[in-house]
Length: 403
Image (cartoon, rainbow, N blue to C red; front, side, top):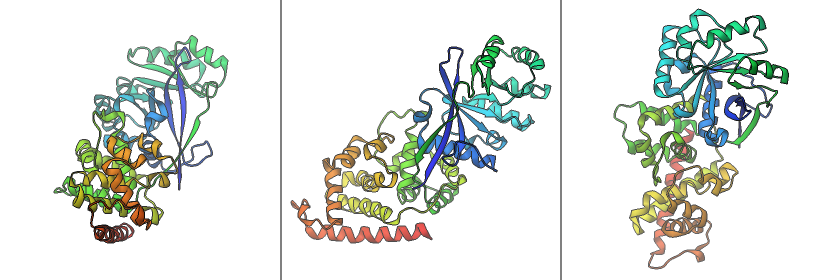
C-alpha cells in the first residue's frame, strides 16, 4: 500500500497563537518539495489534504493556505469546495493579466480568501492588491532599505493583513513586530511538519469510466452509482468528501446513490477530475477487491429475497467490509470519516442488526463455515445461488476494471 505525504507549516499571530497552516507538497518521507510540474504538485496537495487525509485532521478550524499556479486561478473547478477555510496563495510568478484578475475576483466572490505570495511591489499588481486579504513578504530576500516603503504602500489597503515569512531568528521577529506585521511564519517558530497517510488508490479504469459518464449529456445517477460501486476506494473517497465541512451535512447517508444526489453531478465531476489529474489510479490487491465485490453483491442478492428494504444498505456494508485491510487502519477509525448511517456502521463494527446478520452470513458462507449460518426459515440453496451469482458478477467487474 502506498503512503501519501503532505507538510504543514504554522502561521502565527502577534501572540504566537496558530491562526493558519500552509499546506506544502511532498512526495516522500524526505521533508522537501521536489517537483517539475507545478500544476500536478498543486493537484496532489489538494487531493491529499482535502480528500485522502481530510482537512479537519490537518488544520482543525484554522485557515488552510495553498499555493496555486495560474491554471487553478483560471479554473475554479480544480479548487476544493471548502471556501470559508481555504486561502488561495497566488504565486509570485503569476502575471496580473485581465483573465487572472477576473479569476481571482471570481474566487473571492465564491468565498475564498486571497494571499499574494513572496510579494514584490509593482504598480501592475494594484488590481490584485485590491482583492487580496493577505500579502506575504519573504523577509530573507526583501531589501531592508525598501521595506518601510513597501509596508507603507500595502497599509493603504485596509483589507490586507501582512505576513512575514521565512522568519528565522528572534531578532527578525522583533524587527517585523515593530513594523506592524500581523502574522509570522518561519523556521524560528516551526519547520514544516511532515504528515504521512496510508493511501487507498483509486482504480484508473473506474475513474475514466466515471468521467466518460459524467461528460455524457444523458448520464443518470443510477449509471454513476453502478460505476462507483465497482470500486471500494472511490465509494469511500466520495463519502469522505461529502462528509467534509464544506457540505454541512445534516443527516446520515445510506447509499452511494444518495451521496451522488446530495453532492450533485458538478462536484462529483470536479472530484473525479482531480483524482485522475494526480494519477492516483493504480492496481489494488486483487483478492481483497474481489472479496469486497463478492460480499457486497451476495449480501444484496440475499436481501432482495429476504429483506428487500435494506438491499441498498447491505451492498455498502459488503463493499466496505475489507476497508480496514485495504487501508491498514482500524475500521472504527475509518468509519469516523464517512457519514454512513448508524445501522451500517453497527453492521461493519459489530455484525449486528439486520444488515450485520446478512453480512455475517455471507462471510460465513464465503469461509465455508456452514454450521455458523443462520438458516431459520431460509432455503439453504438460496445461499449457494446468491454466492454463485455474486462470484460471477465480481469476476466480470474485475475484468472490466483491468481492461
